Length: 95
Image (cartoon, rainbow, N blue to C red; front, side, top):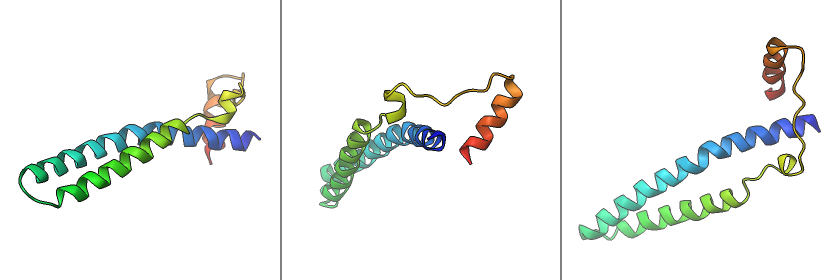
C-alpha cells in the first residue's frame, strides 16, 4: 500500500506539471491555427483541431487529477528521526 501511495504521489506531481504545460502548448497551436486561417491557409483548421484535442484531454486530466489516497486522508508516513532519514526515505521510496 505504501508503494501505491508513492506511485500516486509521483503521478500527481507529473500531472501537476503536464496540465499547465499542455494548456500552454495548446494555446500556442491554436494561435498558429488562427493566424493561418486569417492568412488564407486551410491548414489552420488542422492546427485548431489538434489544439481542441489537447484542450479536451487536458480538461479530462484536470477532472481525474485527484490522488485517491489523499482524498481518503491517507498520507505517506514521514520518519521522525531527523532530516537525514527523511531525505533517505524520500529517495528510496521513489525508486
